[in-house]
Image 1 (tube, rainbow, N blue to C red):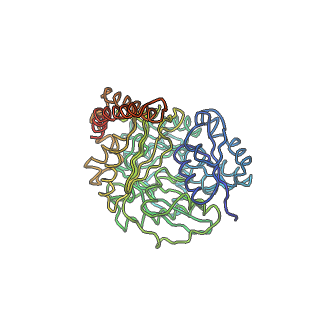
Image 2 (cartoon, rainbow, N blue to C red; image 1 turned 90 degrees about the horizontal axis):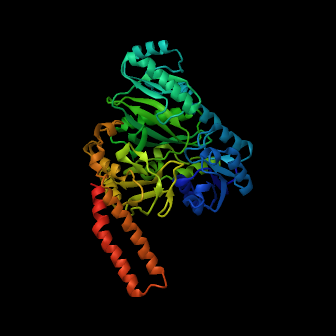
Image 3 (tube, one colour; image 1 turned 45 degrees about the horizontal axis):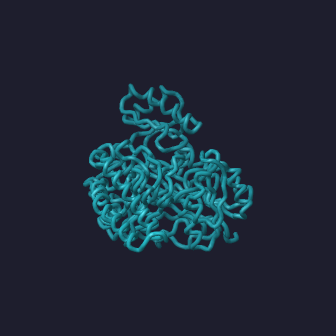
Length: 511
């Protein structure tokens, strides 16, 4: 198979920027696509070529296969990288790429279809002898029959949509008298969200930990795992803080779960990078949950502990190359943590807070990595996921990685929108997290928004004014009409204001 020369990134934001950077290192040309509000987006500025594909709504731009494939043909791209979200797990899109002679940098359509349907994937896992929580292997429609199964399993149970994810179409049921309403509600929500009302029933794992394994497979039957990531710090069933490796896995348990992850990949004929997700109970029994047939948001922490560029590996595998290494060649080096920085208000149920970034100054220094999709002076768009960046730190030990993250979060300056930075600081300081004694219920158990002290509007306003003064001071330096003395005075004035107001605001939000 020939080498890939030009890749169209069918995505936006930080993941598009991430892929473009690896393309640059490999000497591969990059093509960006963008919607109307993304005309000046960072990924558009970074790519070698960029093409408008439609208005703001994703169903008129980033999700329109015809437009993306037309750009691929016009630009001469010989491959498409879907990133995550949008069309990344769409088997139809992968098939259409192949039909038009374009390499889809992802798994075969059969693997996407099999693992995208939770019922089909559970059937495959049963055949592959991968541990699963007790429950129905197939979907079930009859409420009375489902109720009887739930009673036999023992409450609490989980009614879960066969299609989709993100917590939609999912209900936890603690009592038999609540089962019927819960199942009907899950079916209705699943039908509305995914166009598929099928559900299944399984045992709800008490005090669960969400641990996933990164797998990598080539076209020649070689499959390895790049160890695990712990993703138990979540809000609305979505991850906010991830780390690698997990603090609770013994070498023996890691080997067992890694073997199960490889079995999962082989069972569906997987090729490329993928993630096998497990739930681990309080007794350290683990159960297959699902497989994500794409690159994960949190992939940087796996890269930091293994030294492997997963995007580069995706491209090599898509070109038909063999992995070139075995499981025995891979080792965990240190510990890495990722905090997702969203434009969200942690004091208001993490509701999105899109808007203009008056200031965006990411941290730097030893063992810090920031994957950002937006820069200072740009807008966090209301139409898409409100992620600003992914902040990652590395240390020789977990404690060292936590210390590095505390420092990095303290240095991170964002003005103009509320962010998840204060929440991430709360996590990094909390004894449950630092001790490793936590589960997916961390937020409802421990998080108290009032402790973030984000309700002081006066401090936020002062910080915003300070950011404006900084920009004006910079303009004064550049402006020819300003005298040297006036420029010095302006800059000094801004600095004094910042010392008096921004620093206390920053310290307050970071406590």
